[in-house]
Length: 324
Image (cartoon, rainbow, N blue to C red; front, side, top):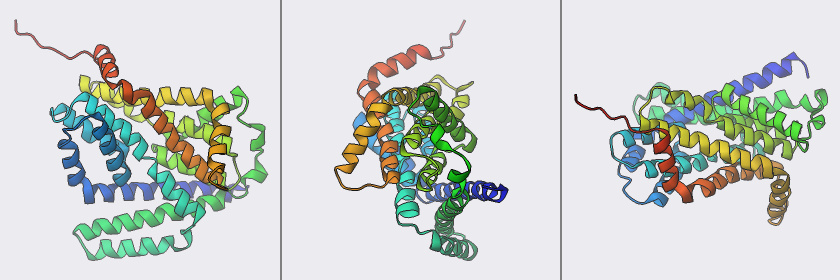
């Protein structure tokens, strides 16, 4: 692997990130008012809130946007803290849709060859129109750039297995797992997008750079790191905002610790279950694991939302002002 391959891989990551941002922003513009109305009218129970967070984030592919809107509605008194946490938990599951989109259309059934056609159509719409069709153009361009970036990344990473011996970091030894976990954690913070980081792991797996087990450890670290950037938003924020942010951090951190410990037993079990449905590509299995991570998080936290909220209220007491 030479410097040209490294530049190609980094360039592919940049194009991928640009595609994700364009897609996310376009979808939010196209469906933003509608999804905010759905959240604002959320008067049902916690389970309905969980499904709403899952559905909304699957559509807009921006869990941060869901979280920001949820915090705003809590501050306005439109939804309760338990409902807000249920929405956030659902959003964590919904955001895994990006990995499935990439796995099915970027790796298994690659549309990279016609990705630039999507970009061209998107640019034409952007030039010709200024209404919602312009946003559709951004969506198409982002979609094309996403898969074009994957194609470029795969080209850049193609020679990596011959240059670096990743088998020396098997992941089956605790020190190896800690190293891979840290790499995934740091990658997510640097890329500012857990979805993009997971896509990088999927591409590395498809190119033979890493094994499935190594990919699973990386994904655990990536999920643990995705809440760190928003943690700084808790500084100087209202008690309700702090509760929601810390709840999301604890959701990802605790789930990551549980799966990190159980992975040696869980990984072969998951492979057996997947193989029961026939020969399944390792990229699909890694996407299953990524979704399973967040589903397990929901199972760990959702049944205990009420005591969890009490704990958060103890941690961040309401600010009271007294007249003297």
